Image (cartoon, rainbow, N blue to C red; front, side):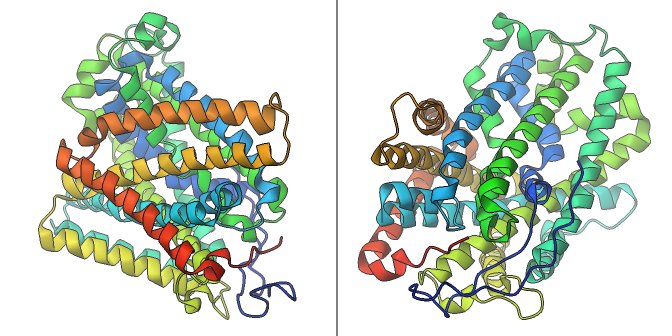
Amino acid sequence: MSVSNPQTLAAPQAAPAGSPDAGTAPRLSGRLGVASIVLIVVAAASPLGVIGGTVPLAIASGNGAGLPFIYLLATAILLLFAVGFTTMTPHVPSAGAFYSYVDKGLGRRAGLGAAFVALLSYLALEAGVYGLFAPAVDEVVRAYGGPALPWWVWAAAALVAVAWLGHRNIELSGKVLAVLLVAEVLIVLVLDAAIVFGGGGSEGLSAGFITPSTVLSGAPGIALLFAILSFIGFEATAVFRDEARDPDKTIPRATYVALLVVGGFYALSSWLLISVWGDNGIVQKATDAPGTLLSETTALYLGTAGSHIVQVLLASSLFACILSFHNISSRYFFQLSRKGIFPPKLASTHAKHRSPHRASGAATAVVALFLLVAVVAGWDPIVQFYTWFAGFSSLGVVVLMTLTSVAVLVFFRRQGAPARSWKRSLAPALGLLGLLGILGLILQNLPTLVGNSVPLAIAVVVLILACFGAGAVVASKRPKAAAGAAPTS
């Protein structure tokens, strides 16, 4: 993936004269292009982490060799969502992603409720990924003869690095993400090429994803659930609106490119991974050793050196994921502070770096608190910390996408959009139906996502409803703050 070099962020822009926040609320600004924004959101999806972690789980508990088709289906559903999302972009000048769209379509109470759910979902996911990152680093260090340290040591070191990068401007984060993302994608593509030129496994290249009986075997609904979770982060393209070169063009293009790149990568790589072990053998292999499926496959085709490279890049992939979600969370803090929801000081930009440095600091503080709770409580970093927080985030993000789809339909209906308009009615409606189906699957399987605990699953749902309700209450009690000032582009 080629990455354009984003220009240094310009000085903060004042709001237009006469606007509610004129002269008081600085804005982020910059010239991020399509490739730069795609880079940030694709890094959030952690492609190597998905191929090495999510894909084996989806194969084992989903529909086996039919998984690549499910990834294509998930891409199609999200592309339908993106049609309405991007068509509405020129009408939503505020860089708030989901909550700005919900605000515009369903009103301030729903908008601020969505904002609270989004912020906590991204913070929880950022924190939870530390639970994957730290053990991955520990495994690499011990493999090369290093000491075995508590997982929180590596998490704390990464937290400091992320805080430093978040304090500086987005260009530096973009360069770091460029290196890490290109490396992780490249190693998987090299493996893919080796499998293709090697003719696949003993059974040749898999045809399971185009065989209806295979696609519908097992639990395709569970496979679809895992597939959707693999895409979380793509929708945050709109968070970087203020820093985009030409937001009305850049944001839609970045959204479509991110979806197509990620969806194509997952479908291709999962198909070839299945091909190595065969349609009949892959389910058993993924069930017996899901955590080592990718490294074992890499060792077969790229040798021990390739397997070691994958180990290292898996850790760097997870760091890139953390950094991406940190950038997203920071901008949610920044935009909500501009609206007066959080202390106005969080909406200031750094004099030198032109970054949302205080908002970044707030995000770091919340994540540090989550980590501290996990350490003090003695939670397992993967089985409990990551699993619980990822379960919450997964439900939260799908709820937000569903609300956004409803908001798009309501907004364009008010605008008098014809019922047969593809961009304003039909595609958003089809996307909404798909998301409602996915939401049902998540709710049905939420106990599994949060450690097979029904009480914890109920607590997750209650917490999301409480976040939404808290946002709605704040909007009612502080209508002027909730309204804020929609920044112009």
